[in-house]
Image 1 (spheres, helix red, strand yellow):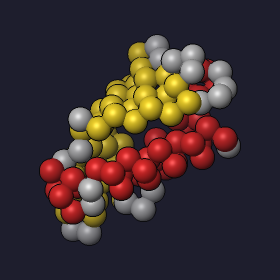
Image 2: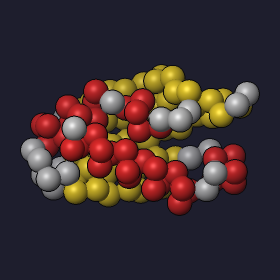
Image 3: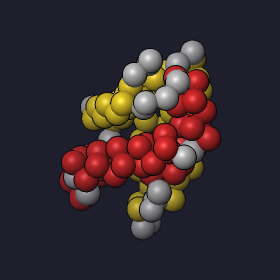
Image 4: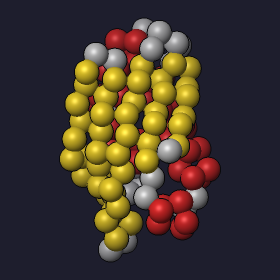
Length: 103
């Protein structure tokens, strides 16, 4: 499981609003279909399907917003780990979350 922790420097409510508005932007560059996006307090469970060429890959996880951080827990398919690499995905998601929180 990949874990990403990012300080949000805003209120938890504003961080939640930014993330809720833009889940698909976290995975820009890929075709994304949101299968599930459900908030329970400050925790969002999500399930998406990304398309990389002709291959569809399921990605699921949770995003937790506390008073200081946004924490993403994400289960990546083996094909993503093998062909793209967890470090590259982590860097991309982290960069996009930081951008969403500044917007």
